Length: 254
Image (cartoon, rainbow, N blue to C red; front, side, top):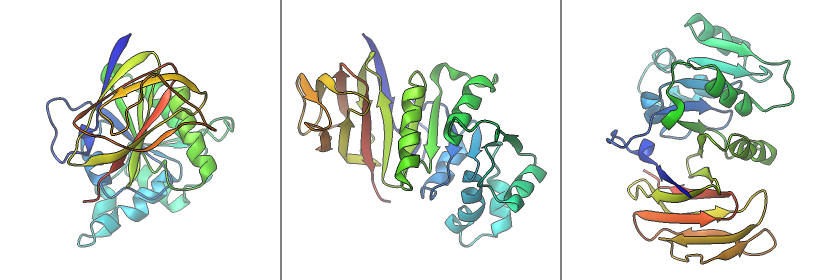
């Protein structure tokens, strides 16, 4: 079984040597307080439809002592994509006048805006080296539950890609069953609370190390055991499971 390593170095204020290149996708929920840090080091920045409204409205609030127009020019998305039912006309006009590419996919009502953005990253960005690429998704958590469920579903639909949902409070990503996982904890910015969630199907057997309450060949299922409110004990957690699991860990307040 192949080893897959994970590390949230993108949350660190300085880029380390093991930093994984990433693309940033903004959805239509409140921006995390550390959005400027994520934006700074992203190789590509996409807004999913109404996510552009969030960038336009909320980025200036993170820099209260600077001119709002300057901030909006500085944080210009490269691409806006979606069915365009949420983005305000003045926001779309503002960013396209600065050179942002707008891709209207209102003809496609079978997929979510996040799905459309991930497809764009996978299929329409030949200049990106996707062999080691990570996709950070901000604004995916904290709003309507059906939207959150749809965003989590995208993790499963694109299970061969590294996609991380990020909010002010936590991050979430998929641990595919085809791999043995090593998670390196950035204790200065994340933890200690964490969880392993068997969404989609029960896990017949899950084994972990590095947690306060480790699992040993444990069965997890909704209606039975689910490892929530667990705690990381050190700098390294390992997970091996017979089914795909969601990993979630808290993000520390500054």
